[in-house]
Length: 320
Ligand code: DP6
Image 1 (tube, rainbow, N blue to C red):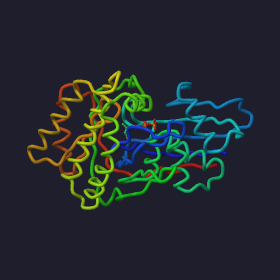
Image 2 (cartoon, rainbow, N blue to C red; image 1 turned 180 degrees about the vertical axis):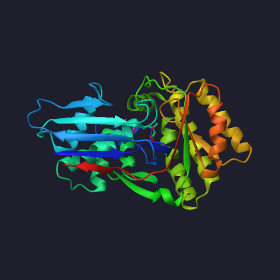
Image 3 (cartoon, rainbow, N blue to C red; image 1 turned 30 degrees about the vertical axis):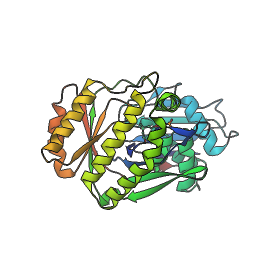
């Protein structure tokens, strides 16, 4: 009744921002992401009938703030009449700072919980479970370029291209390590209810998804960068126009965007994307990576760089 699984965060190139059903956590539109490689969350789940209630530790420290979501995820996976669980999470990158730590956490958790309980769920079932807790988590179950689609009353994930078939690199410019003030789930609800741009954002999503699918199929870096930057800035415009506005950027976020745009004007294959946080993810070709690193590390306000390739999906790493 004990298993450990590991999953990497994913970075959306065509973003998920808005829910069509809050109670089931269903997204209002599809999304496309890349699963990273070297950054990961490892989740160990042990069911123990002698335990009065679930216990969670994150990087060795007991945590109560994430516990309700963890318990909900375990209930969704195994039913509410399950034994209580000891869950320990280890993460090698900053948590809740816009680096998709919840995506890797809940992808790893559903895989570990399923394995600890005897296994047997297929990727589609695991994706629905992970997505019901955190929409982006479903995409971390598989590697490479991943599309999440709305299908009927559910979601479906599919691989558009394996990591090895287009081995791009991602350089993350960390501009702040403190957790973000407002979680993405709450912020997207504010956008949905108050932003005058929200309905247009959802309406145009299919167009951006089609452009990204075509760019990925053709391995057309410039076309992918164009639609990914557009989609990212459009999502942030929706947030900026909401009431109250949601502004995740700091001044270094903007500096990094300028750095990336300048590199591109010099012929370097790089584009940026930014999620619900102040970090800038620069996606580039492997040959461009040294130039991208040199430029971002000297950009004012950048505290640290992390670089990674694209990876495979969630896996069970230990099972007793
Ligand atoms: C900006 O998956 O964290 O990263 O479903 O409420 O848990 P919940 O939201 P979450 O939102 C991710 C938002 C994003 C864009 C994306 O990853 O597609």
